[in-house]
Image (cartoon, rainbow, N blue to C red; front, side, top):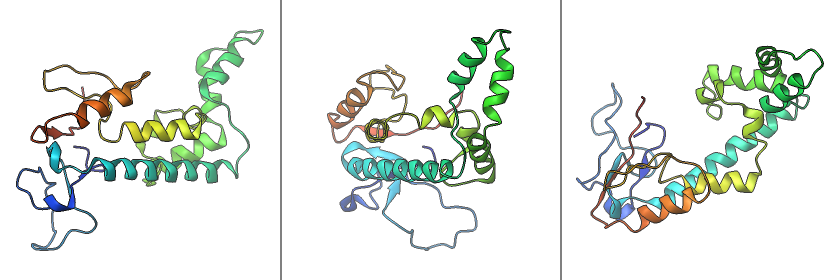
Length: 197
């Protein structure tokens, strides 16, 4: 499971040995009580707290969106990468896309997000170094919030119990993934795994 997004455990199941708990950080004194609600890396679906996870995902998206709006309020408007590339390609001398990308990256809001990502800003993670923030936040707030809600439990590429995998995104993905998780047997083990290819 990604260390930044552990799954909340239903309060009645705190301490259940069926949950996969995060290991304590090195140097943590033995017996130190954890802060906040109990969390785990996974376990039987019946002991996980999907509603708490969804609420947290929406709060985090709202905080991220607020951080973006605060950032762009002090900078001139920026264009998404796609618009910059299209504008340069339509020019009379056919500007190379590398120059269009460079122009996009030099925009003050894009630079500010990159600086914050490198500095470890809690809102703008390192993923923003390879993501176009202007295009990301051009989406309708309510629609993007709904995506955060619908993918909070399922993540982006669930592997089903019968061995099938479905990549996240696309029309109806959130409803499909949420439905799959909600209808699992309460004893079916759900684990969130962070992996790289």
